[in-house]
Amino acid sequence: MSSVIWPSPDYERSPRTGWSRQHWKVLADYLLASLVPYFSPAAARVDLPGRPSHSGSQSDGLEGFARSFLLASLRIAGSQGVGCGELLERYARGLTAGTDRSSPEAWPPIRSMAQEMVEAAVIALGLHESRQWLWNSLSGRQQDRIVDWLSGFVGAVTYDDNWRLFQVVSEQFLASVGASYSKADIERGLNRIEDWYVGDGWYSDGDGQSFDYYNGWAMHIFPTMWTRIAAATPGTRYEDRLQVYRQRLRSFLEDAIHLISPEGAPVHQGRSLTYRMATAAPYWMGTLLDASPLGPGTTRRLCSSITKYFVRHGAPDQQGLLRMGWQHPFLPMIQSYSGPGSPYWASMGFLGLLLPENHAAWTETEGSLPLDEVDQIRALAGPGWLLHATSNDQVVRLLNHGADGAGDPEPGALEPSADPHYERLAYSSHTGPVLSAHRVDNAVALFDSAGRCSGRSRIHRIGFGERDAGSWYQAWLGSEGPWRIEVRSVVCRALEVRCALVEGPSGARVTSGGYAVSGESAPTSSMSIGSTTPFAVVELDNLYSMVVGIYGFESADVRRDRDANAFGPCSASPFVFATHPGGELVLVTAILLERGSPPADSDALGLGVQVDGRVVELQLPDGSRSCIRLGE
Image 1 (tube, rainbow, N blue to C red):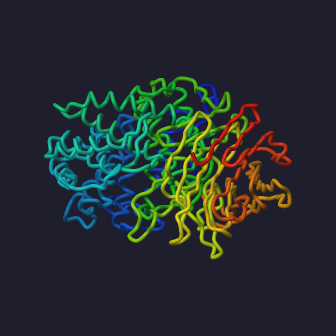
Image 2: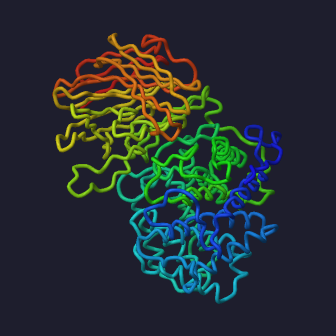
Image 3: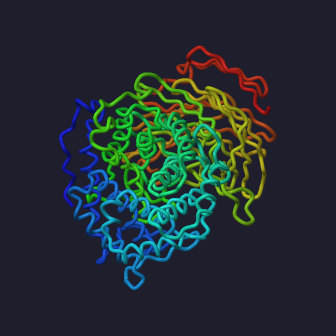
């Protein structure tokens, strides 16, 4: 496959990115054309190379078809069908073969809690958005077969999370074409997400504290897409819900704009991160629904920055394919439900193509983002996050005191398994967690003599202010425990001061680690291990991560890992450590992640710390003061 041939950049209208609507169309065409060699003979599957999902190859082929069909549908609708004859023919053939029960390429029937539900919902969205040009061109018999397949949703049982919405949009599409459906299924799904709404535009993805990009990929997108389908269904009342969804989306975007670096790098947190450009979906949807706090030019600038970031970092690859990974292929970060076609959920990020070419989102000059002008500190009460970002280097840091992604524990387990994409104390736009059993990066953890490490699963919130946040968790070492570990974070510019009250067994090692820096080559490192304030620094490509043991620590070290980080094969994590005396231990750590040169020593931080029992008095580099009372 030849490389993409880009149009000339438009720096007059897009001074930040150079991207125009034509760039989006060219990228969509390139992604779709690159899939052609992988279509099955009857075009009902897209059989891509790569590790299969736990659902098997037949489901994976459907996944490749469905998710690319959504991109094709957005491309078709955005061009009013003009110049899309090949796309229309290819996907019409696939829809016809996939829903023909006698076809050797017939899709698996839709069953309760099976992967086909996800892909069917994406197909339903695509059928609606391309309705005028594709659905209306099918024969009655072809339409009936599609209806018959989608009808597997009626009365079926879904997982009790964002999957509820897959049933909602699919059955609403059935209603829109005059087919049988269950109004009760739709109402139950829409009512259920109300139980997960926590305010300020944020939903948990199911019960608990599962906060991540699924807020934008599903919890906002599918209800608002439902309103678009409902609007095409005579007699359906949707206006009241639409007003609610608009307001919630607006509130969400006021927070979500801070999750992206101005250069387009999203904070690397949560599951299904291989969806990449889908991160742009809620920003486009805000403009589509006239529900965005952002100006149209700012929306385009942000979405173009996100997509351009991934294009610049190898997605798509030289074959034009979106592989399973982040910047590059990286299987350790991929959940077992994802197959080779899973990354094409990125199609959601192309919702902007539904905006006509004369829309202000395409014609206005790119606007500025808050971080362009000044450092940002923002408390996100819904998910329990504290964001601090610096304008000079465009690094966004997310301190996590509320999102654990923890479901129910496995039978016999004392706590749910800890997921590195949720359990860390901090994430950023420029680093990822190390996927290793030894959790030193962005963790306060206990290690025993056998090398076992405590994991942070259920997070219990204990405080939230404008520039500080706190939480605690139960630490286990195998079946021994629990010990309470409390962490309070205070931020100033690029600095996080991490105050901890750690219970633990005598003789255990307690670690407090910073951000893991990763890349193609090994990061350099330096340490001071003999002073009263030990520190460790790792550096690569003008990015450094530094940890300083301000109070209670004995020494410092750097852990190196190989092929364990989405940002590159060579990873290094600085950390400081102490030996637990038994009972309680108070620790204070300074954490830095910045571009540029690190401070020469702890004195250069400009940080004053006094500890009296459980009380930590801080004088921060900007002259402000903070008092942290641990254990209250």
